[in-house]
Amino acid sequence: MQKQGFLLLVLLGSYFLSSAQRVGSTPEYIRTLTADWKGERFSDGRPKVSDAILERLRNISMEEAWGVLRNKGYQNQYEGEWIVIHPDSVMTGRVVTAQYMPSRPDFVKIVQEQGRKEQRAQKGGTNSWPIDVLVPGDVYVADGYGKIADGTLIGDNLGTSIYARSGRGVIFYGSVRDQAGLEKIKGFNGWIKGQDPSYIQQMMLTSINAPIRIGRAVVLPGDVVLANKFGTIFIPAALVEELVITSEVTALRDEFGHQRLREGKYLAGQIDSQWTEEIKKDFLHWLKNYPGKLPMTQKELDDYLKERNY
Image (cartoon, rainbow, N blue to C red; front, side, top):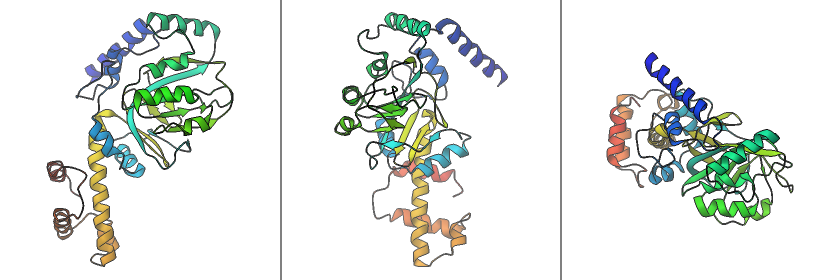
């Protein structure tokens, strides 16, 4: 374990020494950040969590997702108190991160020079650079350090480009302009901290696909986000499948428990504690006769229940 930790420090040190001036993180660095992921990856190194899992995640409640992550030791993944452009919509996707800071002339020069080396667009502002890397299923997540006036990262033109590339929207710890125009982009959504008619100034992009902080949450490139009117939660890619199946089973347990309580078959204390063998058997029988379509396959359910004590 000590040897693995040392190797990780060496890799991270090598990255920062050799690539300290990069705007976009290298695929190697992103693989290091997301080393627990064993599946397919995009060419930029981010984990390629399946579209099917992203779709199932849409039905998971914030509390269920938060509970799974907290039990795994991930206690800094949630941020709330957002202005949501379309509050009744749910968004899931694979995260592309961007970091913004107050402008500093010598640093701006370095970023622009490095952007040329990385063949990033030289017309328009650097706030278009994260948009250029988006692919379908991506969610653009930016730390705008809470700046509202003169901190508007996008308006409706860039919002249209974001949706055209990703089919998703944005999560900004900062602001946007022309919220009315953004609301008209069909399918687009945004979680923001404010809106303002001003345009972005005295603010600079410093990195794409590096670790960032979104309020209370630590976010890595390739995380999967669940965003709804109750908040946003950022899930490590390696945990998202387990989180989805665990949350789905929890929802089924709750549905079963509520039904049995309404029927008066069990007392609240029996349902709200470790179940007896009688209740477990009743639950399995209830699952076999479930009136709707189960959210998971029968094999997924069987495999999950084998290793759980309810």
